[in-house]
Length: 170
Image 1: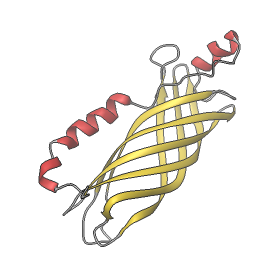
Image 2 (image 1 turned 45 degrees about the vertical axis):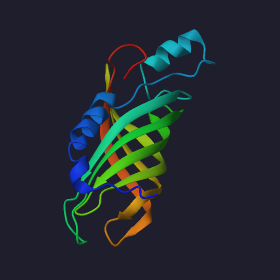
Image 3 (image 1 turned 180 degrees about the horizontal axis):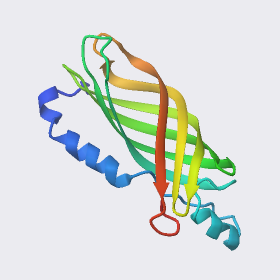
């Protein structure tokens, strides 16, 4: 089975994938059902609450800023995962990103698994700013970058923000 993508066919889908990632946003927290009702109220308003479990749906885009190989890659991802608050303002993350890699030549899909740590650096009313670092592995359906490998290690650093839209949704 040949699962790689011809570059010219998929170009129109870049915008759709990026729009999907933006719409999904930073995540939708879902507190664990076993917590008390008072605890639920607090957890709904703080995605960094200690002992809080949260479903996270988001997006990621990465563009190559310097070129050490023969091609130039752009990566777009839809990311799903879980977070667990280990103490106030610090959470462990586990995610499964699905990347579309646009490279000169044959494009690729890449599936990864990462674990990491996220720490809040700012909190005011509905807004929490954070930094995070994730490590993991990935496998692609073709070589990434060209003349590279299908199996790769991932090391991702990020900064972001969560904004409470309504109770239970950030």
